[in-house]
Length: 360
Image (cartoon, rainbow, N blue to C red; front, side):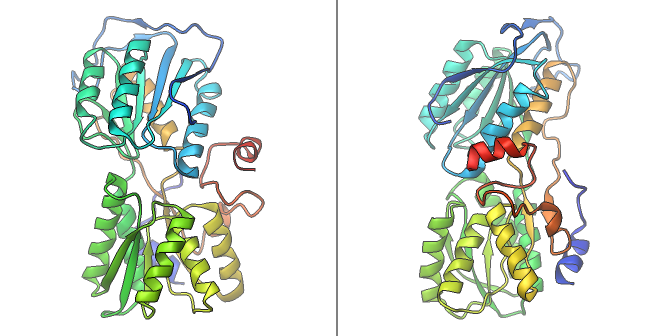
């Protein structure tokens, strides 16, 4: 992770796997884990008694519908097989296809299978609270991340989605004037990440006197956002900016404007390599500027790290702060990978050969 950058500095610099229940061996260590009998020093509900020995780790993925999630699973597998191979003996990876009931059932199956550590990217922030508490009562350490579970019985590892939205919203407002109009391209409707980003961006824009004329869910997907942007630009052709909370969605909006020979308006993005490559092309050609607060798929590795530390008796707190990476006009070249697939997200912990196998 890069060092967090102050919002003022940011503005200044910007202005100038499919199938459920797949088991995979992560090392040659034995699959069992033995309890030490000691409880966490803090006695907090987010902790369970510490254990010795190799761990069975479950990753309950609520949805695998885009390349961020595919890369997230790959980041998890690579970390288990390399950085954490002495701690992890086996992994169980599931995909709930955005079904709360299916994810609860998959988690219950993992508990029966004897996981020691359960990582959750949730299909619902609230509906999984019961199964999370059940896991904690069984001595399973739970860590949720990205779309986290709102429960005191798990560690929550996340960047701040409101801050993410605020950074992009403030930057966009700095490019516009009071009274200007914009529309918003949102993520998957109803998810905590999308809602938080909307909240942060909306407040920043409204505080600056910018009028938001419409919203559309783009699901962080380039094709869906391209369709949504086409419809919104037809209805609101005079907008002065677009707030997009995802890099693939920003790229989709740019493509619509270019196809219609429209002058590009300011719009923030994210660390999606396809967008970063397009941003670099536009920056080099015309000086077009953007900003990209970025939640890396490697967030799952941070969650894994905190979970292992908790099981070894180290209390990270119930919600340890995770800094956002922020890509600006000044540091874009440090992040963009013009030699790699559009589909990957940056920053990443994965080596080039793994990324090539994953994305081509």
